[in-house]
Structures are given as C-alpha cells and as structure tokens.
Image (cartoon, rainbow, N blue to C red; front, side):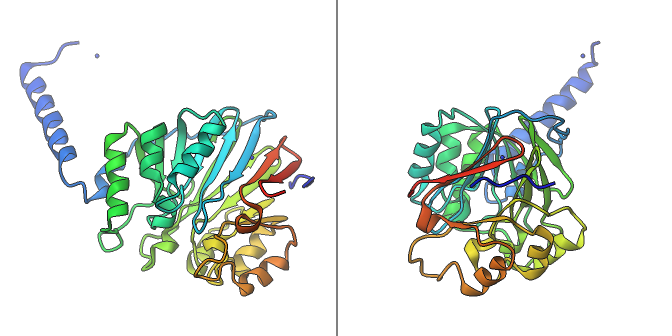
Length: 312
C-alpha cells in the first residue's frame, strides 16, 4: 500500500592444529597479493536476513547532490545505508554531508556498479567512516575495470574490516525498523556493467523507495520478468535520467508517485533526456532533480512523506 504524499571449542590433535595454521597462513598470503582480482573479497557468509516487523518515526532518505554522479543515504533508527558516493573529486562533499548528520560509521554500503561516477568517492568515505558491510555486483574477469579508481576502491576494501558480499536476488536486510531487498542484477553476463547494477528497494512501513543504479532497458526488463514487487512511492531514475533507462516496462511496474533524478547542472551527457522525462511524466509530475534542487531529503513516518531540498 502506498502512503499519502505530503511533499525511508575440546582439544584437537597436533596434526589438526598444524593443518589449521597452514590454512590460515595460505589465506593471509592470498590476502596480501592479487589486489587486482576483487572476487577474493566476497564473503559466502550471509548477512543478517530477517524481516522488519514494525516501524518507528525516524526515517530519512537523502539524495545527495554530487554533480554528475549518484549518492544516496538512507537513515533509519540511527542505522545507515549509503548507496554510491559520486565521482572522484566529490568525496569531500559526501564526507562533510555525513558528518553534518552526526554519522560516525556506516552500517551498509551498496556500490551499485563499478563506474567512477558511483564509486569514485567511496575509497575516502570508507577510510573516513568505515563500514560493516559492502554489497556490490560480482563481475566476471572481462567485466572488471582496471582503472585507478577501481583499484583505489579495492585497496580501501582491503584496508577495512568490512564484510563484502555479492549482491544476490532475493536477499533481504534490516536497517533499523526498515528493510531493503535486492532485486538485481538478475544475470551476470551483461556486456555493459551499467546493466550489472544492484537494484534495491527500501521499505519503511507503508512507504517504498526504489534504486536502480545505472540499469538500462535490458536489466530493467529482466528484473520486471522475475515478478518482483517493484511498486514504489519514490523512484530514483536510472542512469541519471538517460533515455536508455526508465523504460515503459519498468515504469509500469513501479508506478512511481515521486521521481528523483541525480545529475549535474549542464552536464555533457544532456541528462536527463527528454525521452526519459516523457515516459516518467506519464506516471508522475512530481520530479525533483539534484541539478536544480541540490540535495533532496525525504522523511517518512511510515505512512506519509515529506520532501525538502537544499535550494528552496
């Protein structure tokens, strides 16, 4: 149901001990080398996957203005989920924004995909705040970037104590009295890593928020085909409002009442594109853009939504 919108141990033999020590030594050696292969970072140990059964009155989603990039923060009952951190050069803005909210550590980080306008600021953010869990797509060798931004991201993960887990469709995690579910990527063979983006839906009481990274039509259609409940109150437009995202199939499943677009003023890509805007406007005329509004904040009491933004 959509909420009304107002304007988130006993002894062991010596031989067993020797085997154990050897295994630990091998793991340590493997951890010290091969930083270029991110696959070793993933943990097979599941994160907590329980349902949130009740909600309180402390929930916000911050769509942080990082220019031509993406960065969103979900705060619920003092627990935090950061989704991306913008491009290189915007890390200070993100760090200052988080400090202004009194945040000392992040519970979850989702790196939707490995393009620099989404993970560029994450190395410094991870170093500054630390995090318990990092969720990101598992890429094939062919898909894995080799640029300095991605290497810096992996180095930050190596130096942290975070648990890293590959995004898995159907996984559900609690964030205070909210819950967020992973709906994509469905497959692992996309040629463009835009369509390897983590798709997640955050639910707080009766209010729902959808994030699709830079997912393009092919991934959107795959997610819709799973039959997942994509209906939401607030949809953050895919790929900064590109015409290659926010397709009719997805929008018909999402039926958003509010759309947020994260893009930079006078960006070189022309985002948001007119074609995407026309499709979105078939469902809602409540469209808020970071290039116009600055950072956008949506508060929820579990039923009603209140919107405020920087450039009011």
